[in-house]
Image 1 (tube, rainbow, N blue to C red):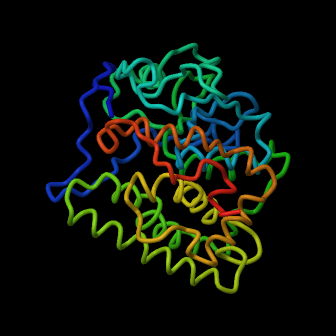
Image 2: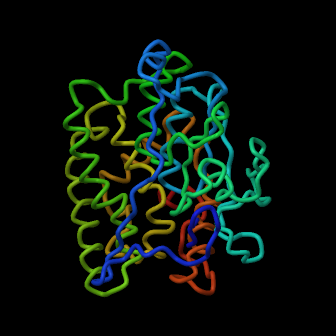
Length: 327
């Protein structure tokens, strides 16, 4: 995986591993905020104000972090307010050019119709010619200031929810005031043990790091399964922020994490409450539109060549949603 070093693309891999072989995710670099109060923006010199058709979401359908943002844009009815531009799911898709995420032709990929670039790293360079770091999705782009607002998914979904309410055609309460503390606590637990846990396990560079990672994943899944014993969703009868943050990992689990990242103590189908919960979330209005299983499978098995050097897709890996649910 390459990085930008002062605006120059390099295929030198980023060092995200400790000496013990543990994978450590780097912090996102762009952490600006969009306000919905234009008077406050003028007074406090905010650079970013919520406006219709001003912002563009650069995403990969393959990436669970980007999938969060796609879901929020969809279920909040912001499709006519925030444009979306999709990258090719296969990293270095153009003849192993080592250019990272590209806009090369692929089903549901229509190129960069906003900035007319070939590669996502060029978008980062537009925002900051001296940027040095990883090139990731999602990216929230500001057409007015021609820069990146944020490349942190947890911030982007919060902005969609908090700052774009006036533009929403179907606003939902996803982060109720009375549940902030509980949501934040469960978000953190799920992020460490499951969302990022599958990556800590899959990218582990030692047996010890792998064993630690995989055990934490399945301990956390057992806890989630228990929490769902007498509830539809994690906090009751309606899905909230935590549910959608967890969903994007779960929908990929049996198709790629079980095989590709060796998270193979159990499949999700073996967790009675989790699989019913996952089915409910999948049937939520418009959610199926946000899932492109071909993007997911091709990205993981054909991009992570250090893990899967020959790009082989396991025969038993689910290729359809029905196969994930074993129906």
